[in-house]
Image 1: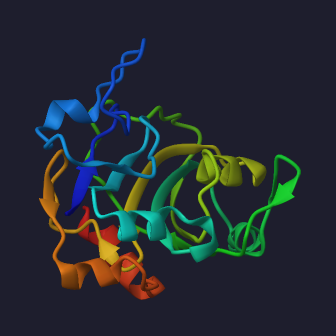
Image 2: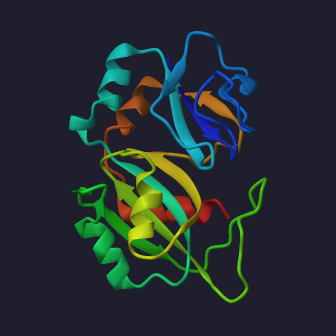
Length: 201
């Protein structure tokens, strides 16, 4: 069984409570036989998977597979095409360069406020980006945007492979069919990623 879950802001990707103010997956009624496949920071939102099918779990967690994950990122400041190209070519994080990625600016996007609104400064605009990565280093997206001087304000994972977040309300989950599981390993065209981003309005 593989489940798709639209993780809210402020929820850690684990079942055990730590000494912080974050909630856990235990708050959402999952059965005892599934566990999170990978992580998404408590301060990030969007698609995570839970499951108990060892073959698929091992394949998803194996960094050598390089399967794609797509994020909608709201950053502080104006992002240029040159900034995007820098992210695509790779930036240096902790003395190593990130793998090539895909980046696209998302104009005219208005998302509903999250449960705790992002900080905004009247004098500084924000920009939405779609970033597609094939690696998952710790807090990688946030560190990548920081290297171009654009701090991440909001981060939503909108697909894993070509399996989209669409049609999952915040805090809800559902089982992924065997056919849908194949989507987890197929790349998502950027046009489709942009469609998912706009569908969240």
